[in-house]
Image (cartoon, rainbow, N blue to C red; front, side, top):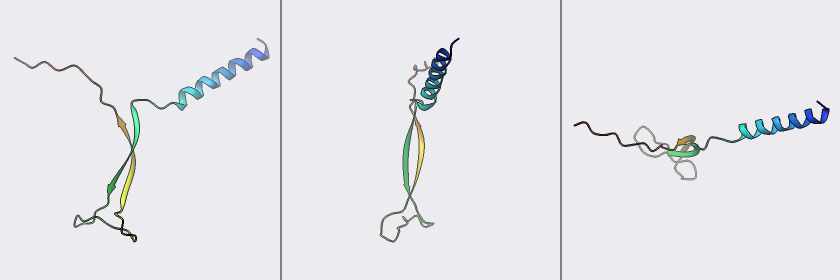
Length: 74
């Protein structure tokens, strides 16, 4: 094969790998969840400016799949 064919094949291979690894799965969306920080007494903790302190985490949120209804036993 000529050098041009090798270069074209290599470019197509790199393009395919980059496309497949770049896309994230559709079923796992990222969602940021924030929760107020509370002290031992259960009261919210406030910072210097008077705002309630929060801890935030990024979590995967999976979509529930629909299934068929389980028949009841007789």
